[in-house]
Each structure stands twice: as structure tokens, then as C-alpha cells.
Length: 282
View 1 (cartoon, helix red, strand yellow):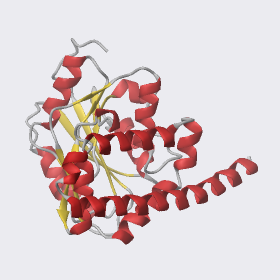
View 2 (tube, one colour):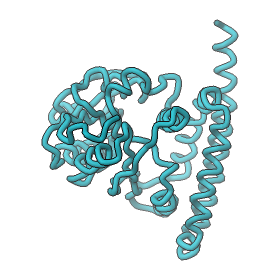
View 3 (cartoon, one colour):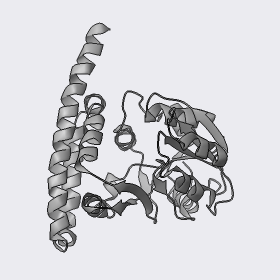
View 4 (spheres, one colour):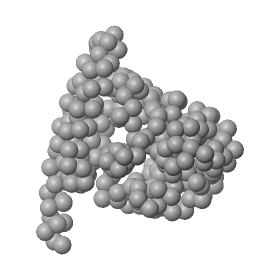
């Protein structure tokens, strides 16, 4: 993509959500507070049973109900969007006011179709602090960041989120772009990811759920899991001095990551069984 593309192209900010009443308003208000001159805010709700939809309908420029999973919600948002660019967020993320401006500026200056926005974890409790420490190791590891700002035409023609995945679909997109020789630039900004008060039970449940999609990711990208593992370990090695300065949280991070690996593995085994049953039924 040419770097001469107008920096003022419209950006469609797409926020899929489900039962995120605690964080949705702060997320959407942070989008509405952007200093970028031309954007629209689309929320795609997956039949929330709390007050999420009511809050979103008051704040979003466009509101839709779709599912069954996050990938399908994002794809619905892309289809309904009118921007030259799309920027996807989770509904527990908060943007600094210049995030969209910097992301589009980065895309134009570097002539890319994808820009990542590094994130940090905020919240309370020991395990949340361990997660925050983990994410700090990724801030100087650009190879691990998934794109958030993407050219809409590319997403419509080649890069729609794989609806067979829920969780790894953004990693799948990063791998696909890398394999196609499409670089992902890194914007000089950090966004907040409000993870609340994490518990080990919540962490394990989410990793099991994400693990269900790992066999599909592995099918799409032959060395996906080993590549991701080696790149994460590279980030930890690169930041060992930072980890050493916080030994208690670093030890907690290691323990948490071991449990997460177990959650991924159990989920992946269940996902592989499910995928085999689907393929046998075809």
C-alpha cells in the first residue's frame, strides 16, 4: 500500500462484546474521545444478558447483534463499516486520545496495511499484576503483536477473521500476514487492557476455551504453536533483567503460564476430537 494514502481516511472502530457491563462504557467513551477527525464507532453485541447492550446503544454510532463468537462479530462489523481503515478493540480496552491518529499516521509513514497497538494490563490483585508483568515483556517484542488497525479492503478480500476460531483468530491473522510478506508496524503508544481482578480459575477457563481452536490454527499454519512458543520465550529472555527486579511476580507469572499451558493443552485435545468428528461427518 502506498504511503501517500490520505491520513484523514475514515476509521471504523469495531468493538465486539458480550456481558461486559463493567468495562464497556469506559471503552466506548475512550473511542469517542479520540482526536482523530473522521471515525465511526460500531459495537457488535453477542446477545448480552446484562446491561452491556443498553450502554452500547447509547454511545455507538452503529449497533448490531451478531454471533456466535468474536470472529463472526468482528466480520459483521467489517461488513457494516464505511471506513478506509478498520480498528478492532475488545470491550475491556481503553484508548489514549491520540491512539487512532498515531495508528493511521504509522500506517501512512511506513506504507503498511496493518498496525499493532501494544497494550498493558491494568486491574487489581496478585495474578493481575503477574499478567501485567508478562505483557511488559512484550512491549519491546514487535514480532508478538497482532495488528489492530487494518486496511478494510484487505480485510474484505483476504483477511477476514477465521470464524472457526475463537481466541487465536488474531494470531492467525498475524501469521497469515507474515506468510504473505505483509509487515505489521508498531505504533508508538500503549493502550490499557482492563482485566479486572484475575483469578486462576478464570485464567484456566479462558485458556481452555481458546485451546479448543488451536487444532484449527495448527491446520492453517503448520508450525504455529512451536513458533509462538519460541517467540514468547525469546521475549522473556530478552527481558530477564526486568523480570529479575520483581522476583515474586515473576515466579507467579511462571506458575500462571504453566497452568495456562495446561489449559491450552486440555482445550486443544478436546478441540482436536471435535474437529475430527466434524471432518468424519463431512
